[in-house]
Length: 236
Image (cartoon, rainbow, N blue to C red; front, side, top):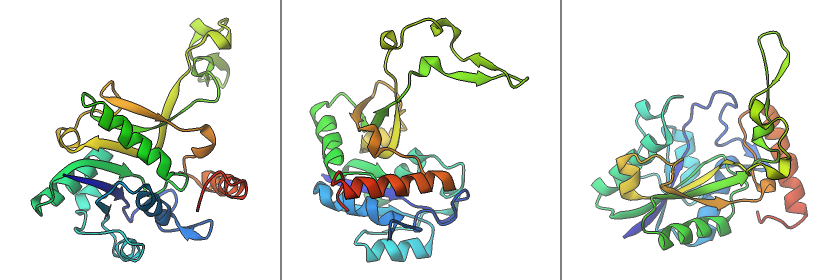
């Protein structure tokens, strides 16, 4: 049975145009995800799901496969990750590939590390009752102390019941790190919910997590990546 890395990389990113192939720290963004998938040594196939000819050519040049073209209806702003992975698994199975596990690795995850991909696979393999294992990290500040701005622009507590609770007495909260999602093929195809008790966490240090959705995000990520590289915390 096959373990497949599936890297979604559509061509029509809006907030940062051509984000998936734009140079990040001197390399196309897509290169980092492909390199990590190779380095972890677990995958029988590394597949890029794209609708874009330029991305397709780059992916092939970086040593990934592009065995199908993603249809346009699965390449818009409203397409879910699960729908993209379902399409990829179905296409591979139709071509005779017996997919057992599929790991979605986002194309814009330059901080993804092979050791955590291996940790996700080990966690899911050890728990046959679970459907997924994916990257998470902790919030740096108690979410129960979040504030909001009301219609008059004034501050109010989002959770008033925790105003006087000591921070050390508040439950630690985590969020999706947006790097990778291991899943059993049948779970992906059934559309099981990822953010649920069906999933296991792979906890990443906060310094390896940075969303890249805006120009400011991109600049922060470049600075962080450079510092981590110089400090020997990550391998390029």
